[in-house]
Length: 214
Image (cartoon, rainbow, N blue to C red):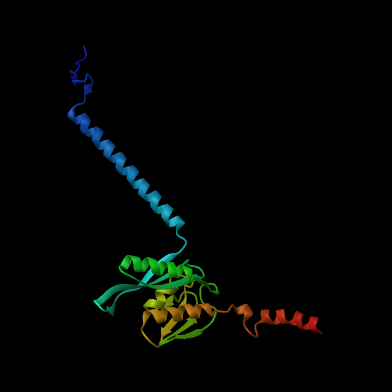
């Protein structure tokens, strides 16, 4: 005859699990819960990344003060760059009572001030030199494999575009906001090679117009 272990019955009449069986059941339930939670986090992170159209970089966060009748009023100033790693880029400068509000406001302004510029493969179309107040920025196209040779502000902004090779030099003020605006102005001034004066494509486009005029 088989040896049957006596069953432990609860007051309610149901079978009571042994300590070992209960521990195994709890361990399995905990593993399943952790697995579901991990999967949910991955799915949520993937969904958030899929929804993201632009990437942002906080270039600088400064504490600023303003003297009023009751004393000094402290606030925070945030400079944010936003781009799509292609040919759209924007920057925003805003103030707020705390860092979070300042950054959020700057991101909204950066998205509002977004520009679309011309790009030549993985570099800029031509050399450009821009001046914004005291900031003086020089940018030159570079050969493939050169990388981005630039300072902190210029590198942060160019890193959010499709430009992979660039040589840049800041010649004037070290004010980060003015340098950022100078970089944006330089990208805005980019003209594709087809529209350069003296280019073959431009000459071909002008010849039919002259014939029609005759």
